[in-house]
Length: 268
Picture 1 (cartoon, rainbow, N blue to C red):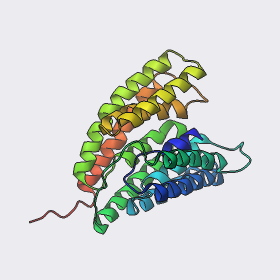
Picture 2: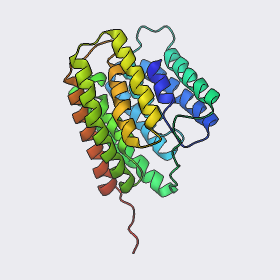
Picture 3: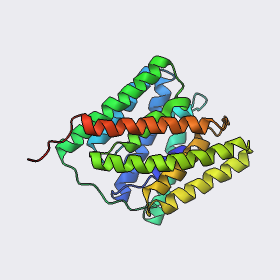
Picture 4: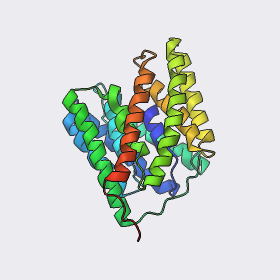
């Protein structure tokens, strides 16, 4: 539920009511799809890739559908009586909070992109996301251990090389600092209530300072997600360093893709 709420409240430059509706449906569908495919990584790869392509074409959806399916597999859910119920409840809770407040935590200026730019962006998203998911399936890796590579691609890749390069630089600075802080927290072997407090504090800091600069978001949000995704199964301190390496690799792949995969025609 908490992961679903977190996804619902990601800042976006679109009208609040339709955005909350789209996100609630996408997050719930992601949870149901992850339950339907079970542990089949190939089917999960197909669904995450298709959702990434759809989000590249339709900006209101964005990466939310792909991340919802990925996090749905991460959360598991074999023991739930109603598939998607936890995701639906978390998304509705987040949507209600946003609608009552009348806004998300940060206002992001919309990026005006033409149809051709969106199609190229969707193709890059599909190729990189599909390749990383296939790699995960071929090597038989756990989603919980390797989803950071896919997440880095989804959140770093932008429609233009300039936007992707800037996003990558800020994400890498934030990832290094956030991973170091997370490693220190995990090295102390904190109790469950302490982890819960750290999750809440990281979420508050991420949303408070997102409007000032994306770098702050890149520090605190991955820290929150790392602690939250491993909440039921505490990780070793060096797990944060492995996640950092995956974020760097995924972000670098995104930068290279915008430069060399279907680059925009240069003006004469």
